[in-house]
Image 1 (cartoon, rainbow over the protein chains, first blue to last red):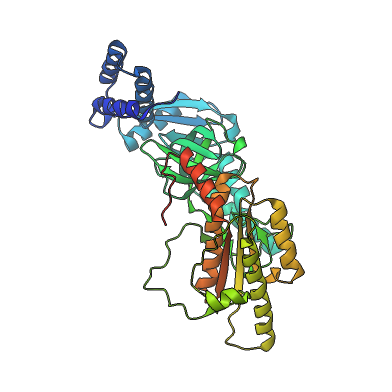
Image 2 (cartoon, chains in turn yellow, blue; image 1 turned 60 degrees about the horizontal axis):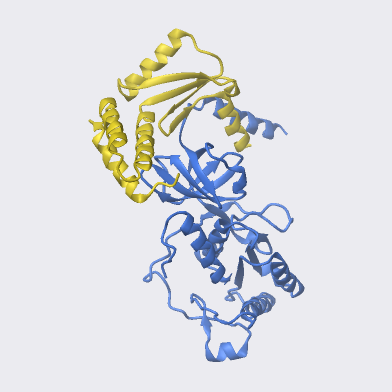
Length: 130
Length: 295
Protein backbone atom coordinates (compact mmCIF):
# COMPACT_ATOMS: atom_id res chain seq x y z
CA UNK A 1 0.00 0.00 0.00
CA UNK A 2 1.31 3.42 -0.99
CA UNK A 3 1.28 5.73 2.01
CA UNK A 4 0.71 9.39 1.22
CA UNK A 5 2.93 12.14 2.56
CA UNK A 6 0.05 13.55 4.61
CA UNK A 7 -0.66 10.17 6.23
CA UNK A 8 3.05 9.80 6.99
CA UNK A 9 3.15 13.21 8.67
CA UNK A 10 0.03 12.51 10.75
CA UNK A 11 1.40 9.11 11.80
CA UNK A 12 4.70 10.71 12.83
CA UNK A 13 2.85 13.30 14.95
CA UNK A 14 0.77 10.61 16.62
CA UNK A 15 3.89 8.54 17.19
CA UNK A 16 5.47 11.52 18.94
CA UNK A 17 2.46 11.64 21.27
CA UNK A 18 2.90 7.97 22.17
CA UNK A 19 6.39 8.54 23.58
CA UNK A 20 7.16 8.99 27.25
CA UNK A 21 10.79 9.82 28.10
CA UNK A 22 11.81 8.82 24.59
CA UNK A 23 10.24 5.36 24.84
CA UNK A 24 6.94 4.04 23.49
CA UNK A 25 4.25 3.91 26.15
CA UNK A 26 2.06 0.88 25.49
CA UNK A 27 -1.12 2.39 26.96
CA UNK A 28 -0.73 5.61 24.97
CA UNK A 29 -0.02 3.70 21.75
CA UNK A 30 -3.11 1.56 22.40
CA UNK A 31 -5.26 4.63 23.06
CA UNK A 32 -4.01 6.36 19.89
CA UNK A 33 -4.62 3.34 17.66
CA UNK A 34 -8.13 2.88 19.10
CA UNK A 35 -8.75 6.58 18.56
CA UNK A 36 -7.72 6.32 14.89
CA UNK A 37 -10.00 3.32 14.33
CA UNK A 38 -12.91 5.00 16.09
CA UNK A 39 -12.56 8.44 14.43
CA UNK A 40 -11.72 7.04 10.97
CA UNK A 41 -10.02 10.16 9.65
CA UNK A 42 -9.15 10.46 5.95
CA UNK A 43 -6.84 7.58 4.87
CA UNK A 44 -6.93 6.20 8.42
CA UNK A 45 -5.67 2.80 7.28
CA UNK A 46 -2.50 4.36 5.87
CA UNK A 47 -2.01 6.34 9.09
CA UNK A 48 -2.49 3.22 11.17
CA UNK A 49 -0.01 1.23 9.06
CA UNK A 50 2.64 3.92 9.25
CA UNK A 51 2.02 4.41 12.99
CA UNK A 52 2.40 0.64 13.53
CA UNK A 53 5.64 0.64 11.52
CA UNK A 54 7.10 3.48 13.62
CA UNK A 55 6.08 1.77 16.86
CA UNK A 56 7.58 -1.52 15.65
CA UNK A 57 10.89 0.16 14.77
CA UNK A 58 11.01 1.87 18.17
CA UNK A 59 10.18 -1.36 20.02
CA UNK A 60 12.88 -3.21 18.03
CA UNK A 61 15.44 -0.81 19.50
CA UNK A 62 14.63 -2.16 22.97
CA UNK A 63 14.21 -5.79 22.05
CA UNK A 64 17.25 -7.99 21.47
CA UNK A 65 17.23 -11.10 19.31
CA UNK A 66 19.89 -13.55 20.42
CA UNK A 67 20.78 -16.36 18.05
CA UNK A 68 22.95 -19.34 18.87
CA UNK A 69 23.89 -22.54 17.06
CA UNK A 70 22.55 -24.77 19.87
CA UNK A 71 19.81 -24.05 22.39
CA UNK A 72 21.12 -22.32 25.51
CA UNK A 73 20.40 -23.39 29.07
CA UNK A 74 18.41 -21.21 31.46
CA UNK A 75 21.48 -19.97 33.34
CA UNK A 76 23.20 -18.75 30.17
CA UNK A 77 20.06 -17.04 28.83
CA UNK A 78 19.52 -15.29 32.15
CA UNK A 79 23.16 -14.24 32.20
CA UNK A 80 22.98 -12.82 28.65
CA UNK A 81 19.72 -10.99 29.41
CA UNK A 82 21.23 -9.55 32.59
CA UNK A 83 24.30 -8.33 30.69
CA UNK A 84 22.14 -6.72 28.02
CA UNK A 85 20.08 -4.92 30.69
CA UNK A 86 23.26 -3.76 32.37
CA UNK A 87 24.68 -2.40 29.11
CA UNK A 88 21.58 -0.93 27.43
CA UNK A 89 19.09 -0.26 30.22
CA UNK A 90 16.66 -2.20 32.39
CA UNK A 91 13.80 -2.10 29.88
CA UNK A 92 15.63 -4.30 27.36
CA UNK A 93 13.87 -7.56 26.55
CA UNK A 94 15.46 -10.54 24.85
CA UNK A 95 14.27 -13.32 22.60
CA UNK A 96 16.38 -16.46 22.04
CA UNK A 97 16.53 -18.43 18.79
CA UNK A 98 18.47 -21.47 17.65
CA UNK A 99 20.15 -21.09 14.24
CA UNK A 100 22.36 -24.09 13.39
CA UNK A 101 23.82 -22.20 10.39
CA UNK A 102 25.85 -20.07 12.84
CA UNK A 103 27.97 -23.21 13.64
CA UNK A 104 28.93 -21.76 17.02
CA UNK A 105 29.06 -18.55 19.04
CA UNK A 106 26.36 -15.91 19.41
CA UNK A 107 24.73 -13.30 17.22
CA UNK A 108 22.85 -10.50 18.96
CA UNK A 109 20.65 -8.01 17.12
CA UNK A 110 19.33 -4.91 18.86
CA UNK A 111 17.56 -2.41 16.62
CA UNK A 112 19.78 -2.01 13.59
CA UNK A 113 22.97 -3.03 15.42
CA UNK A 114 24.33 -6.56 15.21
CA UNK A 115 27.10 -8.03 17.32
CA UNK A 116 28.24 -11.13 15.51
CA UNK A 117 30.59 -13.48 17.30
CA UNK A 118 29.51 -16.58 15.40
CA UNK A 119 31.86 -18.99 13.68
CA UNK A 120 30.03 -18.54 10.35
CA UNK A 121 30.72 -14.77 10.49
CA UNK A 122 34.40 -15.41 11.21
CA UNK A 123 34.59 -17.88 8.35
CA UNK A 124 33.00 -15.39 5.96
CA UNK A 125 35.49 -12.71 7.13
CA UNK A 126 38.29 -15.19 6.51
CA UNK A 127 37.03 -16.02 3.02
CA UNK A 128 36.79 -12.28 2.20
CA UNK A 129 40.34 -11.66 3.44
CA UNK A 130 41.80 -14.57 1.50
CA UNK B 1 55.98 -21.89 0.25
CA UNK B 2 56.59 -21.48 4.00
CA UNK B 3 55.99 -17.74 3.61
CA UNK B 4 52.53 -18.38 2.22
CA UNK B 5 51.75 -20.76 5.07
CA UNK B 6 52.97 -18.26 7.66
CA UNK B 7 50.89 -15.53 6.08
CA UNK B 8 47.78 -17.72 6.08
CA UNK B 9 48.33 -18.78 9.68
CA UNK B 10 48.81 -15.17 10.75
CA UNK B 11 45.57 -14.23 9.05
CA UNK B 12 43.68 -17.08 10.70
CA UNK B 13 45.25 -16.18 14.06
CA UNK B 14 44.19 -12.55 13.64
CA UNK B 15 40.64 -13.59 12.93
CA UNK B 16 40.49 -16.07 15.83
CA UNK B 17 41.70 -13.47 18.29
CA UNK B 18 39.44 -10.75 16.87
CA UNK B 19 36.65 -9.77 19.21
CA UNK B 20 33.01 -9.75 18.18
CA UNK B 21 32.36 -7.27 15.43
CA UNK B 22 29.57 -4.71 15.58
CA UNK B 23 27.81 -4.01 12.32
CA UNK B 24 24.89 -1.82 11.45
CA UNK B 25 22.22 -3.66 9.49
CA UNK B 26 18.89 -2.98 7.85
CA UNK B 27 16.16 -4.90 6.08
CA UNK B 28 15.09 -4.41 2.49
CA UNK B 29 11.51 -3.08 2.56
CA UNK B 30 11.04 -2.47 -1.14
CA UNK B 31 13.12 -3.08 -4.25
CA UNK B 32 12.62 -2.28 -7.91
CA UNK B 33 14.44 -0.95 -10.96
CA UNK B 34 17.81 -1.01 -9.22
CA UNK B 35 16.64 1.06 -6.24
CA UNK B 36 16.03 -0.35 -2.76
CA UNK B 37 14.37 1.15 0.31
CA UNK B 38 16.01 -0.25 3.43
CA UNK B 39 14.57 -0.05 6.91
CA UNK B 40 17.08 0.39 9.75
CA UNK B 41 20.73 1.21 8.90
CA UNK B 42 20.72 3.96 11.53
CA UNK B 43 24.49 4.55 11.12
CA UNK B 44 24.58 4.68 7.30
CA UNK B 45 26.50 7.59 5.80
CA UNK B 46 25.74 9.44 2.60
CA UNK B 47 27.38 7.74 -0.41
CA UNK B 48 28.46 4.80 1.75
CA UNK B 49 28.72 1.37 0.17
CA UNK B 50 26.15 -1.10 1.46
CA UNK B 51 26.59 -4.85 1.30
CA UNK B 52 23.63 -6.88 0.02
CA UNK B 53 23.44 -10.68 0.20
CA UNK B 54 25.32 -12.52 -2.55
CA UNK B 55 28.28 -10.12 -2.65
CA UNK B 56 26.20 -7.35 -4.23
CA UNK B 57 26.91 -3.74 -3.33
CA UNK B 58 24.74 -0.65 -3.20
CA UNK B 59 25.21 3.04 -2.62
CA UNK B 60 23.28 4.95 0.06
CA UNK B 61 21.87 8.06 -1.59
CA UNK B 62 18.82 9.00 0.48
CA UNK B 63 19.06 9.12 4.25
CA UNK B 64 15.61 9.42 5.78
CA UNK B 65 14.34 9.25 9.35
CA UNK B 66 13.65 5.54 9.47
CA UNK B 67 14.95 4.26 6.16
CA UNK B 68 17.67 4.57 3.57
CA UNK B 69 17.22 4.80 -0.20
CA UNK B 70 20.03 3.04 -2.04
CA UNK B 71 20.94 2.23 -5.60
CA UNK B 72 22.05 -1.34 -6.29
CA UNK B 73 25.18 -1.73 -8.39
CA UNK B 74 24.76 -4.98 -10.27
CA UNK B 75 22.00 -7.51 -10.82
CA UNK B 76 19.24 -6.22 -8.55
CA UNK B 77 16.87 -9.08 -9.46
CA UNK B 78 18.60 -11.28 -6.87
CA UNK B 79 17.66 -8.87 -4.05
CA UNK B 80 14.32 -9.46 -2.42
CA UNK B 81 12.20 -8.00 0.35
CA UNK B 82 13.41 -8.95 3.83
CA UNK B 83 17.08 -9.36 2.83
CA UNK B 84 19.61 -8.13 5.36
CA UNK B 85 21.86 -5.24 4.29
CA UNK B 86 25.06 -4.20 6.08
CA UNK B 87 26.97 -0.94 6.18
CA UNK B 88 30.62 -1.23 5.16
CA UNK B 89 32.04 2.08 6.40
CA UNK B 90 33.61 2.59 2.95
CA UNK B 91 32.84 5.00 0.15
CA UNK B 92 32.34 3.69 -3.35
CA UNK B 93 35.79 3.36 -4.91
CA UNK B 94 37.26 2.51 -8.28
CA UNK B 95 40.78 1.25 -9.08
CA UNK B 96 43.00 3.96 -10.53
CA UNK B 97 46.49 4.18 -12.01
CA UNK B 98 48.43 3.45 -15.15
CA UNK B 99 47.46 -0.22 -14.96
CA UNK B 100 44.10 0.77 -16.42
CA UNK B 101 45.60 2.11 -19.63
CA UNK B 102 44.59 -0.03 -22.59
CA UNK B 103 41.74 -1.60 -20.64
CA UNK B 104 37.97 -1.59 -20.91
CA UNK B 105 36.26 -1.43 -17.52
CA UNK B 106 32.71 -1.05 -16.23
CA UNK B 107 31.51 1.76 -13.99
CA UNK B 108 32.93 0.00 -10.91
CA UNK B 109 36.35 -0.43 -12.50
CA UNK B 110 35.90 -4.16 -13.14
CA UNK B 111 37.47 -5.42 -16.39
CA UNK B 112 35.20 -6.17 -19.34
CA UNK B 113 37.88 -6.99 -21.90
CA UNK B 114 38.88 -10.49 -20.70
CA UNK B 115 42.51 -9.40 -20.34
CA UNK B 116 42.71 -10.52 -16.72
CA UNK B 117 42.49 -8.54 -13.49
CA UNK B 118 43.37 -4.84 -13.38
CA UNK B 119 46.94 -4.19 -12.29
CA UNK B 120 46.18 -1.53 -9.70
CA UNK B 121 46.70 -1.20 -5.96
CA UNK B 122 45.30 2.28 -5.55
CA UNK B 123 41.63 3.23 -5.26
CA UNK B 124 39.90 6.59 -5.50
CA UNK B 125 36.43 7.47 -4.19
CA UNK B 126 33.85 7.92 -6.91
CA UNK B 127 32.29 10.94 -5.23
CA UNK B 128 34.81 13.55 -4.17
CA UNK B 129 34.79 17.31 -3.69
CA UNK B 130 36.34 19.05 -6.68
CA UNK B 131 39.42 21.20 -5.99
CA UNK B 132 38.51 24.84 -5.33
CA UNK B 133 38.91 27.51 -7.97
CA UNK B 134 41.87 29.11 -6.16
CA UNK B 135 43.86 25.87 -6.25
CA UNK B 136 43.43 25.51 -9.99
CA UNK B 137 46.07 26.73 -12.40
CA UNK B 138 45.12 28.90 -15.34
CA UNK B 139 44.87 27.16 -18.69
CA UNK B 140 48.31 27.46 -20.30
CA UNK B 141 48.67 24.47 -22.59
CA UNK B 142 46.40 23.55 -25.49
CA UNK B 143 44.84 20.20 -26.33
CA UNK B 144 45.43 19.62 -30.02
CA UNK B 145 42.33 17.94 -31.34
CA UNK B 146 43.96 17.41 -34.73
CA UNK B 147 40.99 19.09 -36.40
CA UNK B 148 42.42 22.30 -37.83
CA UNK B 149 39.16 24.25 -37.81
CA UNK B 150 38.69 23.61 -34.07
CA UNK B 151 42.33 24.16 -33.10
CA UNK B 152 42.42 27.44 -35.05
CA UNK B 153 39.05 28.94 -34.18
CA UNK B 154 37.95 27.47 -30.84
CA UNK B 155 41.11 26.04 -29.22
CA UNK B 156 40.70 23.85 -26.16
CA UNK B 157 43.14 24.02 -23.24
CA UNK B 158 44.29 21.45 -20.68
CA UNK B 159 42.15 22.04 -17.59
CA UNK B 160 39.13 23.18 -19.54
CA UNK B 161 35.69 21.74 -20.19
CA UNK B 162 34.17 21.78 -23.64
CA UNK B 163 30.64 20.82 -24.60
CA UNK B 164 30.05 19.27 -28.01
CA UNK B 165 26.45 19.88 -29.03
CA UNK B 166 24.77 18.76 -32.21
CA UNK B 167 21.96 16.84 -33.84
CA UNK B 168 22.02 13.10 -34.18
CA UNK B 169 24.65 11.62 -36.50
CA UNK B 170 26.47 14.90 -37.05
CA UNK B 171 29.85 13.61 -35.86
CA UNK B 172 30.07 14.47 -32.14
CA UNK B 173 31.61 11.12 -31.22
CA UNK B 174 33.89 11.36 -34.26
CA UNK B 175 35.36 14.64 -32.99
CA UNK B 176 36.06 12.99 -29.61
CA UNK B 177 37.60 9.86 -31.15
CA UNK B 178 39.71 11.95 -33.56
CA UNK B 179 41.00 13.93 -30.58
CA UNK B 180 41.93 10.72 -28.75
CA UNK B 181 43.72 9.42 -31.88
CA UNK B 182 45.60 12.70 -32.23
CA UNK B 183 46.73 12.52 -28.59
CA UNK B 184 48.06 8.99 -29.21
CA UNK B 185 49.98 10.27 -32.22
CA UNK B 186 51.39 13.20 -30.23
CA UNK B 187 52.26 10.92 -27.27
CA UNK B 188 54.13 8.52 -29.54
CA UNK B 189 56.05 11.37 -31.17
CA UNK B 190 56.84 12.89 -27.77
CA UNK B 191 58.10 9.56 -26.39
CA UNK B 192 60.28 9.00 -29.47
CA UNK B 193 61.76 12.51 -29.28
CA UNK B 194 63.03 11.81 -25.75
CA UNK B 195 62.10 15.32 -24.64
CA UNK B 196 62.08 15.25 -20.79
CA UNK B 197 59.61 18.14 -20.60
CA UNK B 198 57.03 16.35 -22.76
CA UNK B 199 53.76 15.71 -20.92
CA UNK B 200 51.72 12.93 -22.48
CA UNK B 201 47.94 13.34 -22.48
CA UNK B 202 46.16 10.13 -21.50
CA UNK B 203 42.55 9.70 -22.55
CA UNK B 204 39.53 8.30 -20.73
CA UNK B 205 36.50 7.52 -22.87
CA UNK B 206 33.30 7.09 -20.84
CA UNK B 207 30.52 5.46 -22.85
CA UNK B 208 27.10 5.90 -21.24
CA UNK B 209 23.97 4.14 -22.44
CA UNK B 210 25.49 3.26 -25.80
CA UNK B 211 25.02 0.09 -27.78
CA UNK B 212 27.75 -2.50 -27.14
CA UNK B 213 28.34 -2.58 -30.92
CA UNK B 214 29.18 1.14 -30.91
CA UNK B 215 31.60 0.74 -28.01
CA UNK B 216 33.21 -2.24 -29.78
CA UNK B 217 33.59 -0.11 -32.93
CA UNK B 218 35.33 2.65 -30.93
CA UNK B 219 37.67 0.09 -29.36
CA UNK B 220 38.38 -1.32 -32.82
CA UNK B 221 39.28 2.14 -34.19
CA UNK B 222 41.57 2.83 -31.22
CA UNK B 223 43.25 -0.58 -31.54
CA UNK B 224 43.73 -0.19 -35.28
CA UNK B 225 45.50 3.14 -34.71
CA UNK B 226 47.54 1.84 -31.74
CA UNK B 227 45.86 4.43 -29.51
CA UNK B 228 44.33 2.04 -26.98
CA UNK B 229 47.54 1.88 -24.93
CA UNK B 230 47.05 5.56 -24.01
CA UNK B 231 43.31 5.18 -23.42
CA UNK B 232 41.02 3.84 -20.71
CA UNK B 233 37.47 2.97 -21.69
CA UNK B 234 34.75 3.07 -19.04
CA UNK B 235 31.68 1.44 -20.51
CA UNK B 236 28.19 1.44 -19.11
CA UNK B 237 26.11 0.29 -22.03
CA UNK B 238 22.39 0.60 -22.67
CA UNK B 239 21.90 -2.92 -21.30
CA UNK B 240 23.37 -1.89 -17.92
CA UNK B 241 21.10 -0.64 -15.16
CA UNK B 242 20.35 3.09 -14.84
CA UNK B 243 22.29 3.11 -11.57
CA UNK B 244 25.46 1.87 -13.27
CA UNK B 245 25.01 4.43 -16.04
CA UNK B 246 24.61 7.14 -13.39
CA UNK B 247 27.92 6.15 -11.72
CA UNK B 248 29.98 5.87 -14.95
CA UNK B 249 31.08 9.53 -15.44
CA UNK B 250 32.00 9.79 -11.75
CA UNK B 251 34.18 6.70 -12.13
CA UNK B 252 35.81 8.23 -15.23
CA UNK B 253 36.45 11.47 -13.35
CA UNK B 254 37.98 9.57 -10.40
CA UNK B 255 40.33 7.74 -12.78
CA UNK B 256 41.27 11.10 -14.35
CA UNK B 257 41.86 12.68 -10.94
CA UNK B 258 44.58 10.14 -10.24
CA UNK B 259 46.51 11.39 -13.29
CA UNK B 260 45.91 15.00 -12.13
CA UNK B 261 47.11 14.26 -8.58
CA UNK B 262 50.25 12.59 -9.95
CA UNK B 263 51.25 15.52 -12.13
CA UNK B 264 50.01 14.04 -15.39
CA UNK B 265 47.39 15.20 -17.87
CA UNK B 266 44.24 13.37 -18.86
CA UNK B 267 41.42 14.00 -21.27
CA UNK B 268 38.01 12.66 -20.25
CA UNK B 269 35.40 12.23 -22.95
CA UNK B 270 31.89 11.61 -21.63
CA UNK B 271 29.71 10.21 -24.41
CA UNK B 272 27.00 11.20 -23.84
CA UNK B 273 25.51 13.35 -21.10
CA UNK B 274 21.97 13.18 -22.47
CA UNK B 275 21.82 9.48 -21.66
CA UNK B 276 23.37 10.20 -18.26
CA UNK B 277 20.66 12.78 -17.58
CA UNK B 278 18.01 10.19 -18.50
CA UNK B 279 19.59 7.64 -16.15
CA UNK B 280 19.84 10.23 -13.37
CA UNK B 281 16.21 11.18 -13.85
CA UNK B 282 15.15 7.54 -13.62
CA UNK B 283 17.11 6.99 -10.40
CA UNK B 284 15.89 10.28 -8.91
CA UNK B 285 12.23 9.58 -9.61
CA UNK B 286 12.53 6.20 -7.88
CA UNK B 287 14.23 7.79 -4.88
CA UNK B 288 11.77 10.71 -4.65
CA UNK B 289 14.54 13.22 -5.29
CA UNK B 290 14.40 16.25 -7.56
CA UNK B 291 15.30 15.06 -11.03
CA UNK B 292 17.06 18.31 -11.89
CA UNK B 293 20.78 18.51 -11.44
CA UNK B 294 23.28 21.06 -10.25
CA UNK B 295 25.15 22.74 -13.09
